[in-house]
Image 1 (cartoon, rainbow, N blue to C red):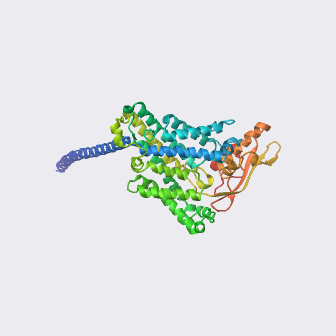
Image 2 (cartoon, rainbow, N blue to C red; image 1 turned 60 degrees about the vertical axis):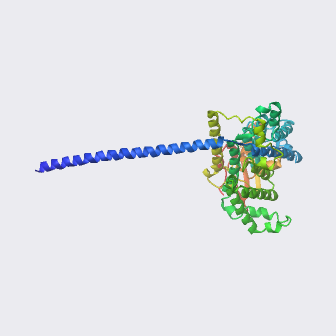
Length: 496
């Protein structure tokens, strides 16, 4: 009975279990099918979005706004070359120094009068780019020549020069000569029916606009620090403009420094979004003009504000210059009536490669400005990750003492270097606040000393610096031999 019950129960259990397993299997299969369907649907949706995104970027749009920016870009570089000549910067920056803090060790200035000829070539190439003559060659050479100058000396690092190099690269690969160019005029005169239409793939415009938006946004991200949020160093800088006509006394007040600090922060963080959206573009453009003109008035930052104003040509409807400046552009109806050929579309593999390179480029420029977060300490103090990060007008460093000492290990004789015999005034002013340049200079001194006297000396530095009005303290460890290649830059810098 018990056995029978047990058997019955067992059979019942087995039966029930079997039924349950069958149901479970059916349910599992159904669930798997649903999951698979959802996954397939999601994958299909993602693929569809990617196809639509690729089609959007690859679509041909009016080349008028890109061409107008090309004109402004070339004109700005030509103007910058003129400023270098007028202020004797070619000699002071690239001929007078005997040592350069090069970004790339093997890149050095041309000898003799070579740098003067280099800047003359820059001027000619910039004008050729502006008028769109031999554009493909002139744009590529202009980018290469400008990048060469940029890489020569970290003492001459400027965010606007870095930006011009990046914009030059993006212009060099873009067909920005398809409108408002002498190349187009020559093509129409030589073979009118085969002249290309005045259009470009949208991704060329998008790359340039995204680069400008990155500059603004990361300029705002960099302002999210304690000193800036309490109004420093802007309050100190504005106090120096107390003698400015009309607004001087107002600028000198602490409230003005604090208000403008927050205004600059909000403008930088929002500007890219305002410019990209068609509905808010007029507001963004007005703010950008006012913001950059005020920067040009308050600070000596070269052509940077005017480059940012010129970049406004890229935003909004790509055909806006054709409507607003009809005397410069042929109407689209005239293009069609004149028989201009549609712009050639790249083959699918080539287009996919171009889009992949575009996204890789943007990813790099989204990540690089954030690299200072992986280093301990304040980037404004140790400068680790400061360059190439759009950290503009954020800190004020004063140096009250700068002494470089050389100790001969054989004789024990210790001497202080006359830095004016080694570096130019500008190089000295830049090096004294940047630990990496101090280390590079120490190694250069040690190498020269070893070459002259046959022994590698011990090189130490005493640098007392203040950040944003704070107390003076050692910037680098004065006990370390900077020429012995200590373990990384941060091993040299004293904590703030």
